[in-house]
View: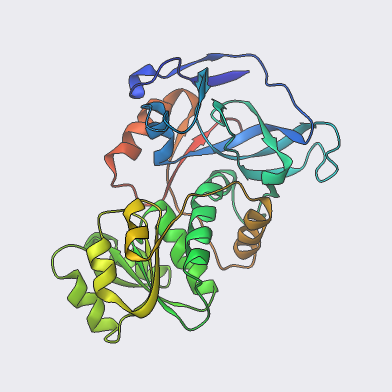
Length: 307
């Protein structure tokens, strides 16, 4: 199969595109022919060796944990799906090795959901990791109908989905973003506020009694979180492990087929869209990583693997 891979830790310069052996399909696994994948910051952080203390890697590594594609073959005792089914998955495994920036990838069936019919391949590929991260963070703060939640970095890949999921739960959403992204954040259903100096006053102006919950998707904002949270409020972060010391919850996304299916239902019900900022080819992953590393992309970056 054709794939993009790296054989040592480093920056985008270590990426190569070429032929690798097709993956073996184990019991309870599904072989997916990849139509699109998407880039997440964790992909290039893993490539730099950032997760080496907690996850083993077997080189060469094919990066990528998001996939949208068609079931090519199933392993033993896998009645949940059939060849030809269109699926999506957050395909992270216990060892960093066989990712989704390839023509073929194996995925545990427990991580699989049917592709939302309302999303094209690129948008569908952008749903799993970001959507499940947003879903898990909102669940961690126990968000319910009628709550007011502050979403830090509401215009980002995870933030845009967190706003929409929170709105679907019946919450009022305030979202921090740069002024250039305020119209975009408002279009998702949130009340935008500029981050930076004075953000606490701006949030308090919208929620004088404080917000019920805060979801931090960027890190480095714990002081803002604690300043705007009402007494008894809940908060979680995907980027700052120190939140636990302030009574919050540090969240790390997990593969979750049922959770992903619920997100797909929201998309097909008209409650969730996945903005795609730009699409690259399989031989352009290094450029896609550089764009992601720049940190100013609004929406997801897709990798188109096949038509």
